[in-house]
Each structure stands twice: as C-alpha cells, then as structure tokens.
Amino acid sequence: MKNQTLMDQLVEAFRCLPGVGPKSAQRMMLYLLERDREGGKRLAEVLARAMADIGNCSSCRNLSESELCDICSDAGRDPGVLCVVENPADVLAIEHSGGYRGYYFVLMGTLSPIDGRGPEEIGVEQLVARCQEAVSEVILAVSSSVEGEATAHYIAEALTPLDLNLSRIAQGIPMGGELEYVDGITLTNAIEGRKSLR
Image (spheres, rainbow, N blue to C red):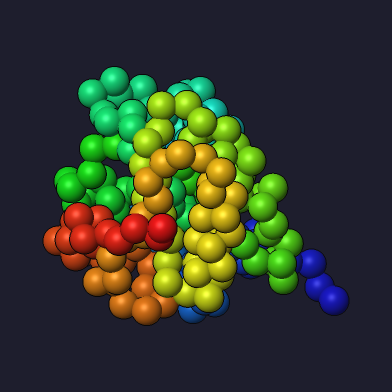
C-alpha cells in the first residue's frame, strides 16, 4: 500500500464535512491549490484558531469564545423562559426568526443509546439545575424524530418535580425536520403556538 500524498490527505480532510464526498473534496482541494492559495492559508489559520479557542458556554452549553456566550450575557432577555434545543444551529435558526427573547439550553444532541448518548452526554442534570434558578417556563424545541420525541419525554419526566410551565413547540415543523432548515416565520409561529405538556 503506497503512502498517501499531501493532496490525498487534503482531499480526505475535506471529506470530514457533512455532504462532502470524494469529488467535492477533490474540487475544493484543486480550487485552493490552483486559484486561491491565500484563501487556503487564511482558512487554515482561522480554522486552527477556532478549534483552539471556541468552547462551550458554561451556562447554556452553546458554542462560545468566552465562558458565557453573548446570549447568556444579555441582561435584556427574559430570565423566566428557557428554550431547550438540540444543537447550536437550532439557536441560530430561532434567533434569526426574531420571535424569541428568552435564554437557551443546548443539549448537543438527542438521547441515542446506539450512538452512546445518554442523559449525561446531553446535560440533563445541568438542565434540571438550571431550571431551579429563575426559570418559570421551559420550551422543548427538539426535532420530531424518534430520538427527539424520546428526548422530550425524558426531559419532561426529569422536570416534573419542578414547579414550572413545560411546553413543546407547535408542530408546524415537518416530521423529521431539523430546526436549522426551517424558515423564520414557521419557527416564530411554532414557538408562539406551543402547547403545554401538562
């Protein structure tokens, strides 16, 4: 077996991105080497800095360059409302809709025993502790996939002992749909039309 060339390694590195197959990765590699070496150097530099300097917010678990993200640092938001989402892309989608002014908690996935994600990995204990602060309402904004439904049910059970309103976003979002791909109007209507789980 021959050693991989540097170009082969670069193609393989691009393939770690979602939706990028061998041909797309090869096109990216060729574009950077043939037409935009400065862009490639800038990409490598910024990517290396991002991998080193971006972590998770200590309060909501969203991606952040500091201990508290910009949303958790915003005192103008409603501290009584907490929206639970699966991933940072969901936060961006809801923020882009402009229809929500509370805080977030990012699970970083859903319950999935097959993938090794249990309650500890999605931060259920941290979520329960966060809800014991000034939170009076929790909105579950997880996907309507099988894993999302199981996660919503598990979280609802974990929050049952607490005295708070628990709701789920309205089902204007297609079954199996991911929040990051839903338009802003649909997201706003889904949040405003949420229904209580108890």
